[in-house]
Image (cartoon, rainbow, N blue to C red; front, side, top):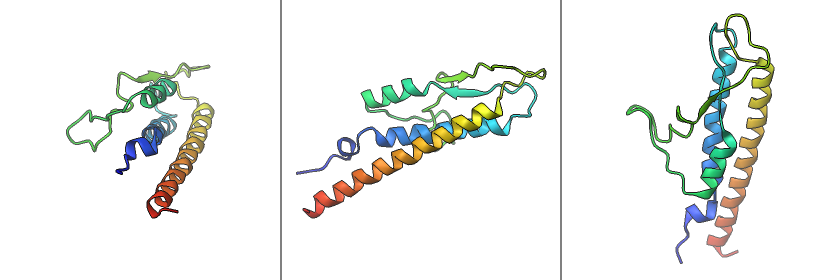
Length: 130
């Protein structure tokens, strides 16, 4: 009987991809904390995860030079963060908020890796017949 990796691994690979893309976005926000006029961005993560869990998410690129999977956080899904206290220069990055979101995202990324690792261990045991 053939093993379907899509069914065996569930939504964890798509979740991991989204967490990785969000890490890059949050890191860009933190890196531009002192850039005048920079607008902090984030993704509607809950809706993307719900979408990924509900259907087989096919990633596509936004540019011919991108590696596969670049549009999980495409321009249509990127949202501007509403600042609690915008700066005079128009920058909307709140470093403390961004760092907290980044840390929370890192924990979720790591826990998803742990769950995915457990899935692979279970598959390995099934293949060995143990």
